[in-house]
Image (cartoon, rainbow, N blue to C red; front, side):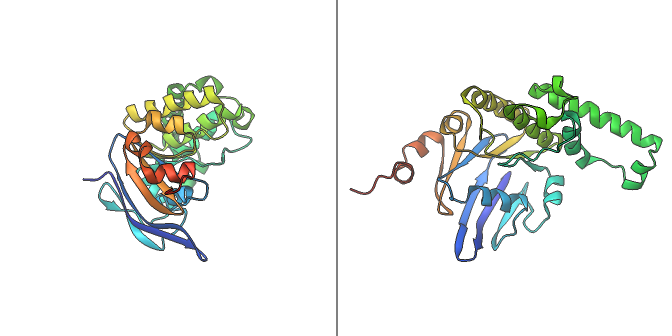
Length: 254
């Protein structure tokens, strides 16, 4: 059984083929990176898998179940969570509150019972808070629980978004450029965090431009160029792939 199976995904915007007939698989408990030049279709591919952009063609299976055509919240409920290239934290809310929002994906309380503050909702809210703090502690941001999330340093805000995605209890985590805007030390720390998340039993699919991070933590790498797959292999094999070298270094046949 393939953990994630993507078959012949296509998406066009006008006359531009952002993703053109892309297929790949992802094994459970691994880290797979998607790389490629700017405009290669990486984020569009993420949006297709997570339901934020509708498909023109193709299929996506998660744990052998079709998820193409589902809404993003339905895909999240199936066990796929994601972060975004641009931070999407809630201003005016603490770090803990931001993380707890992710945990509420699995809340059984209905809107009315929450509004009425019924006693049985208290225990659930207490558990959501406890679980959120545990995730924050695992990622090293528990000391900032009461801090306004958007007042933190940029690198720490990245980790808050990561914690919120983990609070959804995903089996698969999609990370869109997790090291974007980070300095060298923060990037190294992010690489360690992603590896720890995989070691926690969460499979990771990431889009990333930082090649040192990608090569150091990935089990497999998918390479896109102009919306098409040009390589899908282990890191060393991708490094030695002639087509990948040509795309990144601009070498021609001569």
